[in-house]
Length: 156
Image 1: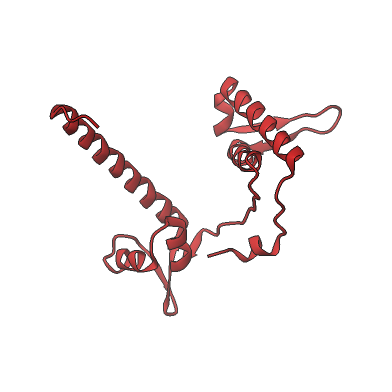
Image 2: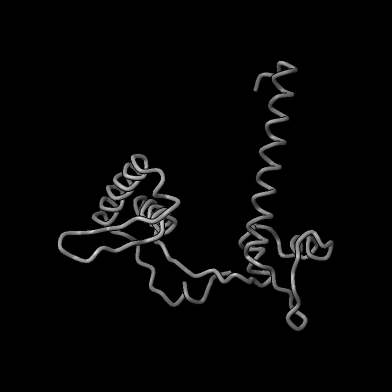
């Protein structure tokens, strides 16, 4: 489901010059973060020339790198806010699962929610935590299957 704030903004495909600038910026910022890995989890201060310093959270720098990486391959990029409380369709879209699947998780009380009238609302942090747990489970099961394949000397 598209966010209204994203739809209202004009999306422009980057031209060749923007693609090249974005690619250069991604390389420079990634190189900078490799030299200063602690900054990705704290904040970064920009002090260009005689201007006043600008301090941004490290997470924003990571997002900027993601935006630039998309632009570097010619993708149009839009940014939309994500509210801490999501409707069921919004949460399902974010989780990349069918709405019915999420509704079953809610019905089975596998994810907490609150009611607003007849509608249900799910906290963003609940969705993020569920996705982390599912990804960890998937990694663990994949590792177990790979170990079993090695044990059985199966060649893939």
